[in-house]
Image 1 (cartoon, one colour):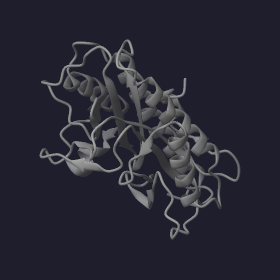
Image 2 (cartoon, helix red, strand yellow):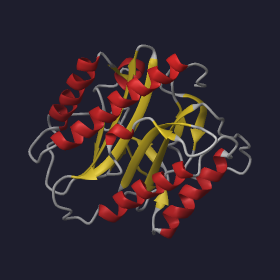
Image 3 (spheres, helix red, strand yellow):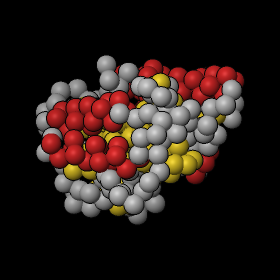
Length: 254
């Protein structure tokens, strides 16, 4: 959305702080032996206490308040009582919600407990590439150039990007224009970031795969060539200079 008045900025700041704080608290709450359903319900309670509504649940009828993907799940993992968290698991939590007509989105991958499977380089690459990408966004910058930066940095780190998952505009709904802020460059895309707009920028960095494929449950995505995928996401306000990180309360870079 385009921010045209202070009340809109305040609305976006409020919901962004809510989803950011929820993500941070869920990450801290996750423990070995806990089901992803329990972790999701904890997050759902936080959103409810703020008066916010889960975006995937409200918009798409997703069977959970947040998407929790574990190990080889690339995205949109369904919270389940049967999915029990283990030491060293690679976990991704994606929290998006609505409050007073404003929507915001954020996510992050992390390792539970000790990094016994050596996922940390992949997690770090995703985090660092997101930070670098956002640092290069301002009004007038081509969306395709940010995609090029993300893919180039992933290759430098020895990784690939998922090409059919993308960042997007956000604000008055969960997904708005620009709809495809991709993790690679599409030369024909001449679209540019516009000052005073709110967008969700997200990295999808992978070890083996370049395409995410939907499973039989109709939600969960896994890589087409297996391996692992990490995602980090912030909702930002585009300016003439460094963007305003609206979801910084998630502390994914701390």
